[in-house]
Length: 137
Image (cartoon, rainbow, N blue to C red; front, side):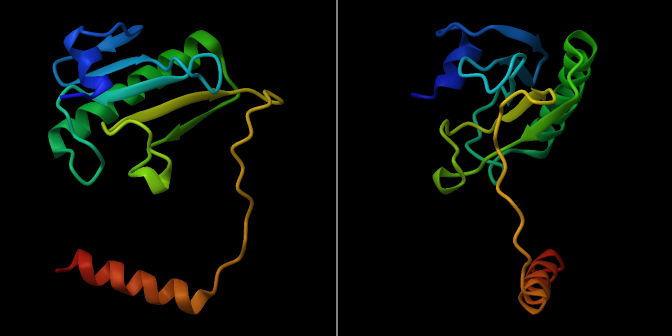
């Protein structure tokens, strides 16, 4: 497999690890958006949220919470951006499920804003109906 994150898990590539358990790994992002930017991954390869098993997802979320609390205690950020991307169209660059923890400080210069544009409420209701239908199938 040619997955950079799987190679970090296997010890074939270096990674600055901050936490590890049986199912998940947290390590520093080498292209950080801010000081303390960490990635949390499952040790088992799963490309996206659509592929990851529930036990691995729970382990990743538990590790994300634990590491977020450590970032808060050690770096005292004003806030934290937590995000996860799925597929190239959503800007996912590594095809291995991962969560970003990005500490934020007032006036840190990190610009991830996308603005707000009011949506068409009828269209929003129609799309919600499709999702609700799929959830009850």
